[in-house]
Figure 1 (cartoon, helix red, strand yellow):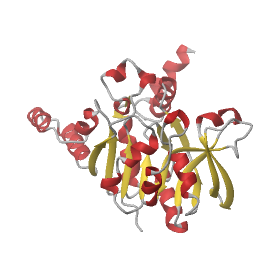
Figure 2 (cartoon, helix red, strand yellow):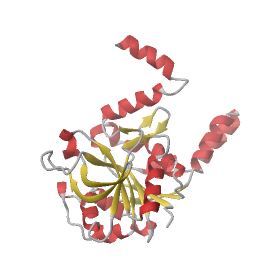
Figure 3 (cartoon, helix red, strand yellow):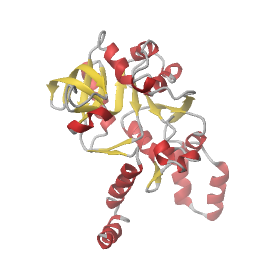
Figure 4 (tube, one colour):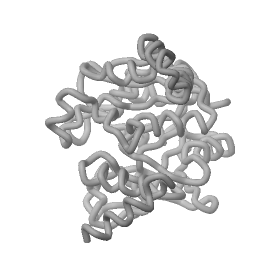
Length: 286
């Protein structure tokens, strides 16, 4: 079955970025000239997604407004004759069909995904976490959808992690089935290094079968008293095979101020109009 819908989870409070996130959603922080969430939206579009469901929370209206039309702004740009920016904001409003649902309590990633059940319905869907920005020749999500079409089970994205970092990730027990593709034998949420089943940590991309919703509804709270998607996937393993797709390219973790700053500098260095001057400036700083 074709994967037509994607859920972008953007309901967190962004406490590591306070005080700015008291007034501005973390997902709207700019990476050069685009907010973080736009990178996830564009990855979904380039992967063949036709409809996006944003899971938001109170105070996140700015994300919905960003992807909506602003007729007053369009009229201002028309009067100024600024056809380039006018075209840009009109294209933004027509990127893809976007709707939003709210996670009314902060009860974990699994709970946030469950909030999208009514819109997703009984079909496979993708999940993207905007904190993870992935640069690759082929969109990471597109490759995962290919793995889903080939094997038929849910797919998680994984990346090799340092042994000391296992307590920051869900970690899989893998069996290799192809280059960069594994069958998942088990998943553990944030294990201690001494008991981690591998060094392959789950990162912010998933392709899930609709059965995950029923499983999430009966998944008890786990780490942090939250409904963990990793725990739900472990339960789903009793009935369905799950696969892991190892990321290609570069992942930027923008969920902390330092990670966001690293991503901003790395992306700016690749821009023809910014890179050369920025490179010289950084040399002078050093």
